[in-house]
Length: 219
Length: 220
Image (cartoon, rainbow over all chains, first blue to last red; front, side, top):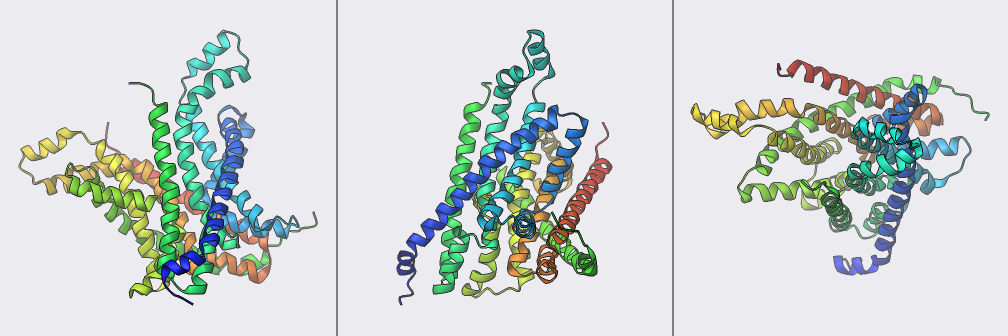
């Protein structure tokens, strides 16, 4: 067996690609599910009644005060303890989606609260319903603040997806660890994993900056 | 559901959880202090007009902010020994978290530096201070007050990152919780209490930072 890095890389090429594909799928699923949930969380925080606001505030504060790794472990162990056998992949994605929803919730809350109250009053004055006000007056304006922050959350999710390796999901980091356990080239392969994560995240970050420029108000 | 909560196994091991929490806090405090020193230097470099200072600092911040910290933790513990750089678990984690927090705190401090009026530097020069004296005795103290709110959320997020030390078997809170979870099978109880400990600690950190913020507030 050859121990040159490039020979080992060639042998491991499909394993690495499938790990990267898995990491991207996990992140995409988590950000989609988390965003849908997060938009409701954010709306509840802004427009909810006192009781709903309290419940949702407790939810976001608890999620934001708990490390993602604890969420991942808790989701994995608790789901199987109560007899819902999710398996590591679904449990992990669930934990990340919940984590994402609290981030997105706060972004949505911030974006909606930044809109002057007069906008809602003007919409009421011309007879729009709340649903109409939200979809055609408030949300389009909130998007300007929401989008760049949302893109950054996507990069956070890619980074958080590495934590699923701890519960045995075969994403890029776990695949890298498997490869290293066969060829002991820990320096080279951790470096490679780091480089791949960097490329993905840096790409997302640049895209976020681009969106920010595009959506900025002309000054 | 036929599940009845029974916390006795968790309470029996509560001292173990608390000692884990203490280690988490210790890791966070040391790393964040070193990280703050790194961040402060980087922030001055980032806002410097000299490209030779700004470009390397920007590279440091960009690279570290775009890497998952778990990769860094594993790299430092498992790969650095190949370069003849062998550290024990706790030291290697503190090294990683310090370097990582340096990048995040640099961004926080940079925003603070940009909010300091230029007139203050000019005033310092006018009374004959060196540029180093201006930084340490005028700009840095004012900047720290300005950034306290965003510093607070960065510090909390860095504290939560100490949970990743569990991946290299440092016996901090998450590691202790996993151990109790596996030994007692009181899964729901273990994670409820662990999460509560993290949430309460984060809440206390936030309260402490708000207290400091009020005490240091400039009279208006």
